Image 1 (tube, rainbow, N blue to C red):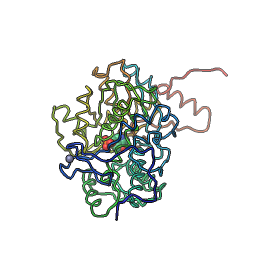
Image 2: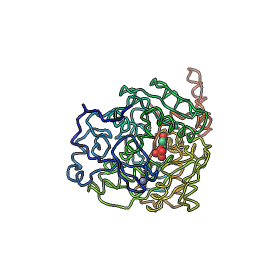
Image 3: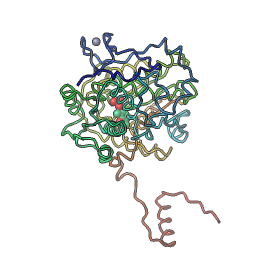
Image 4: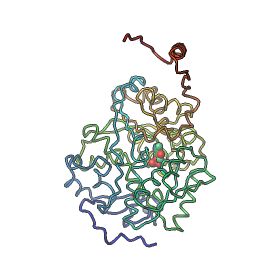
Length: 435
Ligand SMILES: *Cc1c(COP(=O)(O)O)cnc(C)c1O
Ligand SMILES: [Zn+2]
């Protein structure tokens, strides 16, 4: 297929992105469906005309935009007004006082992408951008290599946009992730292998079939979508940067793009410059970035994943070295936690803040707790923990750790007996109220 931009689409005046640039050697490329530098094999990244942006974008123009990621469209790599808008983004930023108290810190916020639209993970951000760009570049079939959430997002948003969709997942994913993909009617390839093997297969398919793989040949556009998680936090904190962020690391892309988002808003004068510490979270069973951090290495040694935190189980992380660099230069940390700690993290967030997250969020909360207990979070720092996915999709992870309902007969005495039992189990703090 040819990858020319649709000639019928008008270029938007809001577009400020100028092309692609190699992150390693600086070689510049046209904004096509390419992701690696021909000269040095470095990853390509989207560039913008920041001088132009600082003239035309203000806090007011952003605030007047839609309540979705598209309020930041000038900072996103789309050229036309033909946006795929399924209400993605602008998720709640919650002041988490009860969780903060439990952790002995004071100014904690939860950025809650467990309720991101349409498929309840942060991946809807990257896919909304990637598929908008895919359509601009003329693709009619889209695809991805996924640890679960990306397949959900790609299938759902492709359905909305009327694009053909074929997604690839490891065959051992949670039932909720598989069902949450199949329902949108894509072709689903469940590969006998781990994510890194799925990804390698997809690179070959991308070369031979000319499909738009959101996280392979469209990766430079896809990854820009994560910057909106940085922009939103700035705006929701009243146009201020936080002091410290904690986010999960799979490929490391999300982490590096939150950083890029903060840098950009500082550069164009939308927010006052401030040092922000970046801390990353991994599960012990797949912690190549945390291991490199601990061992003071500046290269990543790939691992074979074995953890319940499947959505972040990438053994050979593409942006691992960049994530390492950001954690180090911002005086942050990269930590990992065991699977039981991940489950405890899920429960802790649910019990203190009423947010049910998946295993990636459990990892983030468990690492936040570990850092707080080690004194690596200053109690006064404004800290933002990024919750990136929804717990209803990974029910297997908490099965057997959350108790059972008290089954009773539809009779008052049966209820009273059960209530007594609940009290002795310490499950209910019961106050007698006279009515
Ligand atoms: C994909 C994913 C991440 C991290 O992705 P990166 O590859 O590091 O950008 C984090 N949380 C959830 C729930 C995810 O699905
Ligand atoms: Zn290069």
